[in-house]
Image (tube, rainbow, N blue to C red; front, top):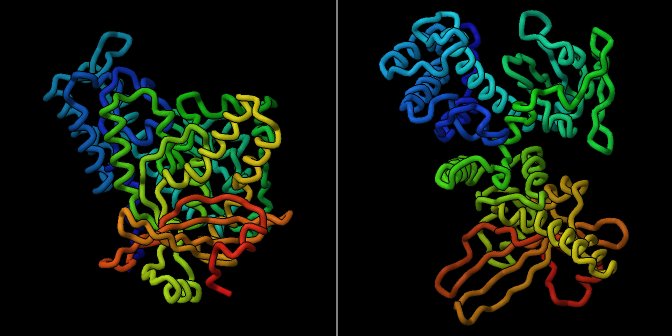
Length: 439
């Protein structure tokens, strides 16, 4: 029996959870908004968007061809007396077959390619531990190829290089470029050139076949200067300025439902953590499983505290409070010209991006675990605070604080919930305030 093509589960989920928003022009929405919204230009007040969205989801789910979609869309347009914007000759969908094909093809391929791109990005992020080298594959023939995209063909960047934040394909209307993921050994064996973005966020100089330097500001057209997969996985809703409050609420709710309880592999955690580290990040209280305490330490924690759940949980608000909010406090202190020593204390407490990998490992395998029980008589409950720690350089300790609660009638069966994370002086744990569990 021939091998079956894997079902595009992630691509179908990505398209299905989009929120329908009518627009007059496609670029009324910007970048990340398109990763969460389904729209078609000139659809405002036309009453067609629900039908087109349903057809797109059906086409994705059933693998329908463009010709099948085109036929169904033509029937819909005739039924609704809607032909979109007329062409330069004033002709609509029925009058001009060339225009009809172009418009329908644009709707079909834009949505299909972005869905596959978002799914492929997330799959490649999950596998980045084994295949960390991402190679740009340009369209080599046909009308959709571009000289500047060709200049990048076969070149590569590491998966976490900032280059991919704006230049993961598609990088323009009709762009058919792809990204291949390689192991370090494969990249070396195949002689793949691995490039790096400099400290200012600028990719290296490249020359196209005509001898012209690639203009990285124009490499992706303005409408496409974002990574649809990254925005789908880790959006910052603070940047969504073009949606009505109701539409934004629906978008945030759909994202929350799609991510609640998701078990994050390290690479996905890094993408989400970097986004939550932004000062203006807008959390949604999405519930994420960020770790699972290893069995040896879990048994010790259970014996000492009565905690029966090994899961390590956080909301994206918890992550922002631990990261982006600290960056905001630092910036506010600088803006107010507070004393330099006070600013430095805040900087010392903040977890640096370069340590996010260590943070993720500490969630499941801390170097040390300390705990503290605090009685809350007003609520008639006991709060248990767990400190997962790891030694850092310069006599500093990374600590990640979790909390659970129990009452006299309800044992502690809840998962450990993130409170905050910070870097403190090693002496913090020498005064006897905390009891060490995993000696």
